[in-house]
Length: 297
Image (cartoon, rainbow, N blue to C red; front, top):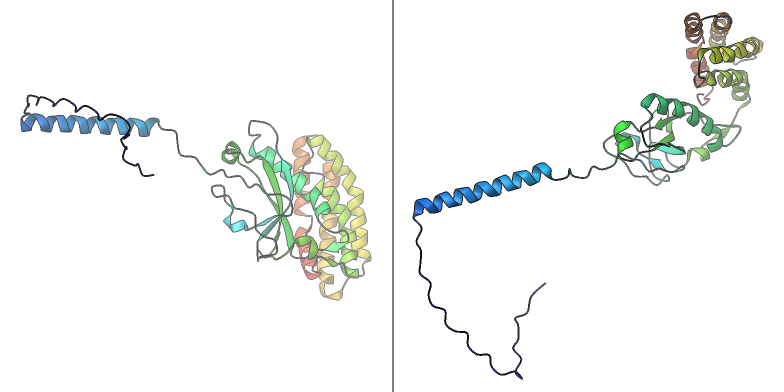
C-alpha cells in the first residue's frame, strides 16, 4: 500500500513558519565507549531473541489423523504415523479401500491392546456388509488402521477397516464391484469350512478363559462336522492329497479341543488350545483356497 503525501488546504491561511531551532550542543562519544555500547545492545538483542525462542509455543504439528469415510480409497505405502494421506479417487490406481470406520470414544487413550482387540472384532464383522453376498473376492484381504497414543493426542479417534490385495498390487475401482459368483467347487469348500471359521472367530474376543472354554466346547461338534464333510468330498483330484492332510490335522485338533473343553484351570486350558491352533491345518486350508481361487477367511 502506497502513502500519498499530505496536501495543504488552499482555503486556510498559510501556516506560520515554525521557529528556527537553536542548534543543540554537540556531544562527542569516544570510539571505545561507542563500541562498548554497540556490544551491549547487540548482546541484549540476542538474549531477547533467545528468550522468545525458548518460550515461544511449539510449531503446529500436522495431525496424524486419517479422516477417511467408508468407500474412500488411499495409497497404503504413503500412510504413516507421521504423515497422513488424503483420499484418492477409487476409479484411479490405489492400494487400499476403506469399507468401515469405527469411532473411538473417551478423552484418554484406551491403550493399544484395547484398540487392536476392537479392530479385530469390528472389521471382520463389517466385511459382509460391504461386499455382495454369495460372491467370491479372490486375491483380496482386510486390515485396519488404528491410532496409537501420539496420533490419539493429535485427534485420530477412529479405526479404519480397509481392503487390499494379497499380492499388494494396485487396485482400480471398488472391491465390491470386482467379485465373481462361486463355482460349484468353491461353494462346496466354502460351505464345508465356513462354520469352523465362524466359531473360531468367536474365541479371540471372548473375555475370560472360562467363557472361551465354553466357546471351545461348542466348537467340538463343528470340527466333527467339518471332518465328515472333508472325508465325504468329492474334491478335485489335483489337491486331493492336501485335503487328506487337512483332514488328518483336523482329527488331531479335535482331540486337543476336547482336552481344552475339559480343562479345570487356565494353564492347562491355554496349553491345550495352543496345541489345537498348531494342529488346525491352517496351511493346508490356505493351499486349498489358493488352488480354488477362494478369498481367504
